[in-house]
Length: 261
Ligand SMILES: Cc1cc2nc3c(=O)[nH]c(=O)nc-3n(C[C@H](O)[C@H](O)[C@H](O)COP(=O)(O)OP(=O)(O)OC[C@H]3O[C@@H](n4cnc5c(N)ncnc54)[C@H](O)[C@@H]3O)c2cc1C
Image (cartoon, rainbow, N blue to C red; front, side, top):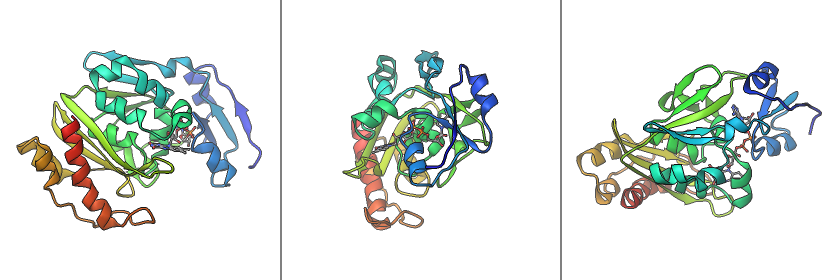
């Protein structure tokens, strides 16, 4: 690991003031620190967000659940507000990784990292959430740009995520048994603006399954979701599963998610 300087800011403004294109924010460190150890990331400075207690808040504001960027997966899974308003989101957070990962990993770190197999991107896209940063609000539909790529500018910090409360929602994943990342994960929601179905793990970046959304808009049932044929074009093929296998999993998991919702 290459030498770096370490900052322990006392506020969001202080953290942002210390950021630069060569610095990285440190949240749970679950992705960043292994990347640094492997030499895949070599920031000149780490800006540790762990002292910013305000960023850990989870609360309901009107018809939205607002989750601070530094809320851990364990905190989201254990939140009464989340469990009552969006049980599908509490379930998702409670099924990320293992206990150690859930106790360190944060929603802000997960979204900024945008691992193609991560779970939270499916909830952000599937619920039509908004990612709030130190300088703007970014619609979930515009946030995930590509493989490990987001709409965040260099030095821009996620401060919270606003999730509109849906009528019903659920998440189902077929997990990689060692890491528990999604080989395929599907989030379904009946929201104010209609049905949304978001798929993670299957492609280079999370995406909406429009054919399944259309089928569910006509008939909200597990059989309607499971009957949709999904093309394997553009899907991931790796040692965990072929593109055809992932394509077959998407409607199956969507159907299970509808049944759970
Ligand atoms: C063994 C293992 C299993 C896992 N299993 C799963 C799984 O099943 N599902 C799943 O979804 N995830 C899984 N993860 C990922 C994990 O849950 C973390 O969410 C993820 O590693 C990143 O979150 P973090 O808080 O640790 O971020 P960090 O590693 O600290 O940071 C990641 C990146 O985000 C940036 N960043 C951090 N916070 C902010 C912010 N507020 N604003 C802007 N940029 C920021 C950092 O600079 C860095 O580039 C797993 C990880 C491990 C190690």
